Image (cartoon, rainbow, N blue to C red; front, side):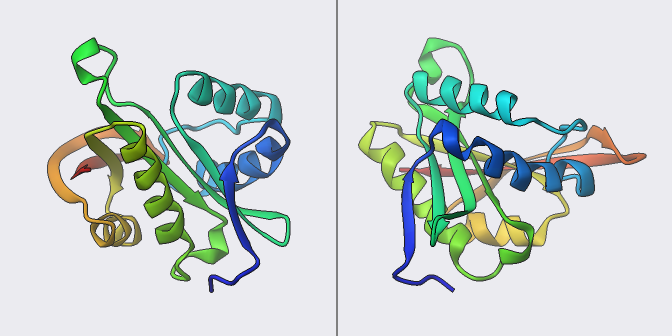
Length: 167
């Protein structure tokens, strides 16, 4: 449950270990990310810096100093005509879904992207993933694409859907 002790701020290098721990749960135990090897603190520090240096937001949600989750945006595509479009990512500690933290993070990320002049946000979801679909749709995204069997993890072919929101 969201409380007054919740803090939302830009991610910093000091958050990298906590962010990596959150993400590595999904890498090792789920197919929501197609990454198959754990990410260490140094690698996560680099990723945070690259996103922020490119002018995109990376936010962390904390409660009493503990990182509960994170959200960031990255380029949708590299060609210059796509410069007003972004791809979004949100991850929470595994035991926190359904408490409103994901919505809080996502809405803050979308607001920041709008302030920065972005027009479109895309969210890719490995399917099936009811919780992520619900989060995206709660935040105003609509499904715009479905790609069959584009990823292979844990011995199975996986589909990916894309949800889009105009800001």
